[in-house]
Image (cartoon, rainbow, N blue to C red; front, side):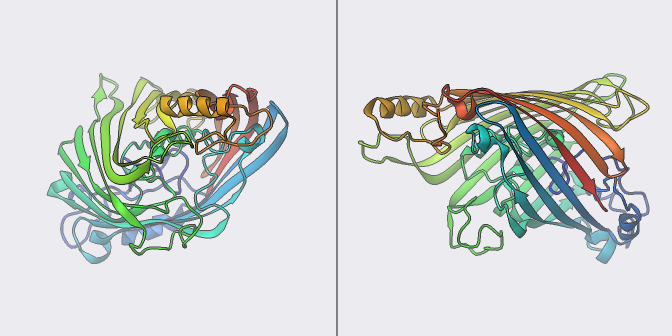
Length: 450
């Protein structure tokens, strides 16, 4: 469905085989038209989608649950967060003979609370990526949009209500991890609210050009909204769909290269991108100074993943290294730079080909300007600025940098069921020297019904 984006309701690697040649109707098959295959993840009840795919329909119902407890830190405790999701993808070439047309929609419900709050990190580096943004509601509309494939897959145009990060700065491998520094997108990129991530969305149009199979160029127009991520004006449910809160436009662009290297055809994905948006931002200033507003902002990112060793025939059966870097405008962003390096090893044990070992290291560098402002505020005895400041006991600021480590082992329990024991270590939680390092252990479970 979203070949370049983060898996919406799906938080594990796709172990399905894709669609068969039976997806043919009224002329050319969907595959011949270059359309993206409907998702077919491994599930408890595969016969549901096996039947629906005859009509070009895919429906996915799943649940992700993330539990973490603090075992070493300023205080102990545990919290759990989760999400149930419903996804509908429709191939209209199969159902109604409209060549190249697909539609996609996702709705979720979220519950629980964040374990990071126990150690004083309420959002800079969320320990559980499934927490927040439309949480604790029965249903939250994530996105719905249409996608038209033309010129045998050389041109795709998507339009509707969708998150920018479904396509830009996106990698479906990222959600092998629990913490929000990487899953579902690189966390630092969300410092600019014009760059909206799942489970929220904005009105947009996104063309993607693929002159040759290994290269794509995509760009877009996304209408920014001033209440993104806010639990008011109906946005918490995601059903506030008018344009009353549109306050500008964002223009992302991304160039990608997707080679298959060597005799083992080791897959890789390399991308570089940037975004300009024309919304207003309050820059970091001392409370004693007049508020300065800056119109427009930029972001940039470089990402890659590359299989180094092949363990099996699948696209992800091997040792894969993942790297991410993003830069924000330090005049108004909390994070100036973020670096992430990660690796996954799948099918290392051939008796259990779907088991995966995952390891991650993330480094967050706070905006130099914000750090200087906080230092001056501290000297003056003023409250510290910053979106993620807390009154946690022992939190003395200023914020400067933080590091996070994660290690997990994803166990394939049964078809459509995974269970991943997880370890995380936070160095300088909330990027504050006054907060003790903390270790957490828990698990991430994922069940796909169909």
